[in-house]
Length: 303
Image (cartoon, rainbow, N blue to C red; front, side, top):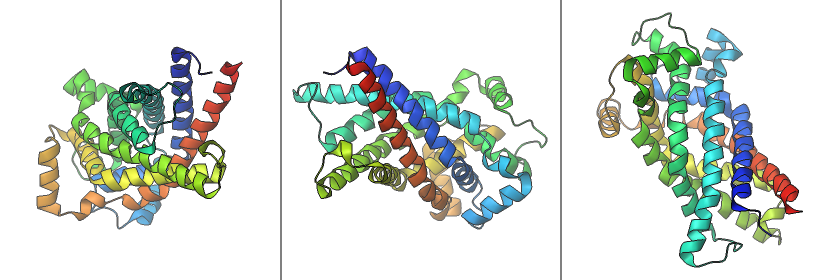
């Protein structure tokens, strides 16, 4: 017996929020390295060099820079994403003329995830802008793009955006976010479901009972599919959001063409290593927390 749709939405929302928290705590230092390497590809020789130099300059705190907005961003994004994911699955069932309790195919689930990401982008874009700026503040000052000695707290960044661009300033890089999320989340949910299906097939069980390690691996695999497809787009988004601090930044196409013309293809993949390393613990933790908390809440409402 499926719970009431509103109850179901609240369960999906809460389970998504649990997943988002687990994802940030396990992956934040790698994310900081990614944003720094994307925005200033010439500063760091590679992932380890970036890690070590940040640690030397500002200690462990430097690697967890932007954690507050990252937590808010991830909780907001995953809560909205998984709630919309549940809703979009019902829409797909309705359009396919299926019953509410029918299990969808992996491709149908991937499509649901892709559409759900449009809703989560609305929650994600502003918080991600603040997070990226906080993470790259040190390099922006060092390269002379902005005056040094600026306070780098969540509120100082928020105030700065409101003062310079008004509320819509938080949506700089919004088009790029959607361009990144649509194909990205198709691959994310597609990879996750496909990997679970393969595990279930080999273990001769159903998807719900494949165990913790295969579940975490599937989450990581979904994340790896997402990043391989969307990494260059994400790189352009980071540039737009960070460099718009120093004044008006060009839109997606112009920024992309500028990078290709002046720097070539390589900088678009700068920071891919920490991202691929991060995706397994972070997305593994995300899906594990989501599935476990969702099962637990479904049990409570099933009686």
